[in-house]
Length: 219
Length: 171
Image (cartoon, rainbow over all chains, first blue to last red; front, side, top):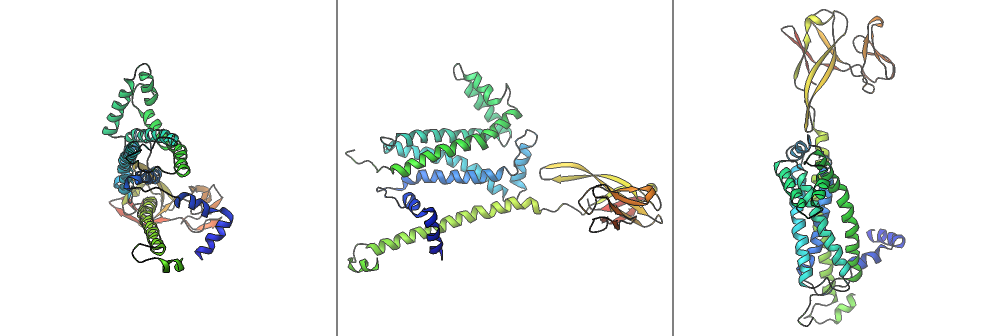
């Protein structure tokens, strides 16, 4: 039955060829380090799902943000789990993306013809760090407030454009509800859009070019 | 495929063994995927549904007013403030109740919320009836439906009187 449905769909969608191209493609001899990219993707999906769930109760205003986070953590069924997955997933995301990058560096896998995969990967790492930076403010507690105060002041140190960057990030001189709202907007709209677009190119190239084998002594 | 298996020597894993390994690994992958999906999916549903199923507290006696202020034989409107916890917000709600007594001893407390679609009814003194402006519904003095679309009489609260103060149960 499942086979007949599969065939019926294949006649119309041609999904089997897509499936073969994506998952049954030839790969060189690899080891567990080659799973770091997939692991990062897995955590990214986790972040998207739990992040969407968090927006159901979270409200990004100075008078309610902290109360809604407490509500999610202590009152809502499984809220502690959803928030916990998002919280620890954020750290895992940065760690896995960084390890993935190190593996690519050590294997020289960024070289021809994979330069664009590498460039998009670097952009993705910056997007991930942007997620971390903006997401850290959202619980709107003391730690969040002062971390962002310090973080935006670090940006201020940059020569010439520093002060302008600080004003742009905070949405004014002080860290206020304006800052919270724009960090939220960037965290749930701007960065996810950027992530999806860049990730599409990144993964398309992995399927198109294939992955490089580990370099030997003579390479 | 099974024909090929016959020609393979027993020491190296042949196409058949290879196929079994592949089938095994793909079913393990599917199984792990299913476990993770359920592990996140079930809490996710509970998370969304949870607050929707939470009951509002209805076991508090709310002081609504003094017996001396209820007119005999006429529904009289009383208002009381109740503190409500909705989600992460605690705020004061005002509830309005019509109190009716014919003898000064037994009291009826009726909600002023129309049982049709939730508009507020008001007592029309000279016509001796409740009127809901949304769909021209008319209720009698005791809350019974006289005219219009409401499916049932006005809701009643449980009432008790202690030391000349009238309490209603609920919120």
